[in-house]
Image 1: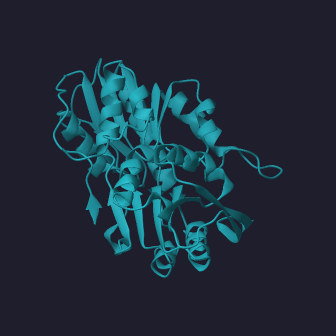
Image 2: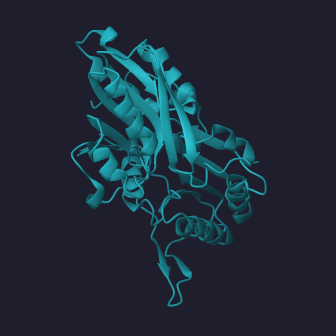
Length: 337
């Protein structure tokens, strides 16, 4: 099931703004262009016979403000290289400004040296994007927000909680607030959960997680009273779904009535879908920052569209107006009118 959070269109039909879609997010790029009232840039990212990337731009971009919609989701390296080549082509075609709209920023989990001789790949990606000619980054829910500091160009960092806030309030509507609790799947998610708690005035519980190896973890304990309550787990990323399903199962075992999950990026690698299917999760809501193939769609998963929020952000960047409103939690955002 796909839930839409945009109706109507922004009034924007300027010749000097271009929306360009990469292969990672063609559907989202089309939605954003439609919402802004401009056509998608006539372009194609293909392959030469030997597998090298071929970039074709079929219309004038000289002096234009170009927004490339491209998540660096799996296959990560393919989509990253496409983004770099698209940027280079635009800069060599005299575009006035190139903004990389990266709903999902790959390599964000490699933001520090965890062991001796580890690379800091997120910093390398930042350098590559800047060297290619990207003038600005627009992204959502970086796994490590401090990655913004890896760039010497402006970075606009949107939060999925802006969309999820209304959904949580809808879930609570007409019910006793004391029957709900927010759950952080690990200590790294506490700040994200705290923002939602400020809006909903709900208490917070935290799972105590021990990671045994990369992409594997064990839930040791739950800090907080969850017995008899509807648990709302929030996270930025679902990869192998190990953390989120173990947290949901433990929360349920400790007495939670129901478990709902809200997460920004659904990578769903390996056997993630099977884990979700067999877990105690009642419903999982994922934003469409990463395209999820039909083969991975099950009844427990619902996709929520982000086109409206990104369209508003692009409009504000293009018109040089304040982005502040997009970083708050206004009750009206995301509602259909």
